[in-house]
Image (tube, rainbow, N blue to C red; front, side, top):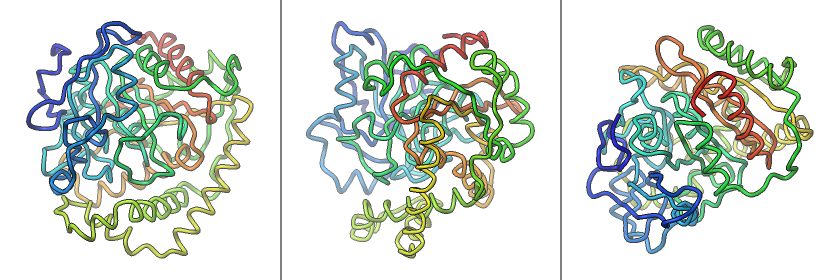
Length: 402
């Protein structure tokens, strides 16, 4: 295992070139720990590359450091560098043709997952103790599942994204990775506000049918032991129908609503700069540019309906549990069509939390086909700390390092 001082980069997790580093405060709850940040967060005196050389070329060096990074430094953690990301955070495999795609330490023949690929890989390889990412359509949860680490997408808006590049502002969420559930929670104790209903015990446990049916049989089977342990903590799972419209409808409406926001956020720069993009990225921005406003509006309407449904369902403290991703990471030789098919199946599931701003933790509890798969726990907005505590309890029940 590499030393956690940030000097090694055996998996290509960090942005190439000089390393952005900063010592943390001498004391604090995270003192002595090293962390990395996805290269869409500003660090004073350093460029924010956003995974694309033309973005870095056309933007000035950051004048200030993102508040979320400042909070970690003030808590005693030391910054070891900035990590690679998919171009403009618009992708789920982790591929970056300009900087190189990070190696998946747990499955070297497979993609690491995106867009927080470098952060997940750095934690999985032991290069840092924890790492910041961001999640719009699954960009923390999917790489956490693929790389076999813990990852959290907090409640939308719980952690500031000031000083961070945007993609879909009403979906964009700060998140982080760790190799242990206890450390994931320690970081949360620094970054997260107090829960909306502190002391409320989680439960009942709900098992939504659609994400389980959507998963490969081998993935669902591999997660069986973790589900049994979870039921030992919360009681028997209640099987429910969560998406009567079908997960493909969740994907389609999410894609359309997100695309409209992506073009509103980044379209002016794309049109003016005409940047070079790697495979798939240019096509996604072209689709966003040409999005029918009526389809985007339908996506927003669908989102409002789903959000109301899910928040009502979870308001009393209920917890959802389902596969984070329907399958292990795609193999590196997967075609663009195969990658797109995985993206659609995955984002139909990640849209569940995305539509309603829910908090979600992915736990690395199993392997399928020789590669990691994660189990997600999902709770109502403002239940982040309780969800992290439940993840710790489940890890302990499974005999995983806490």
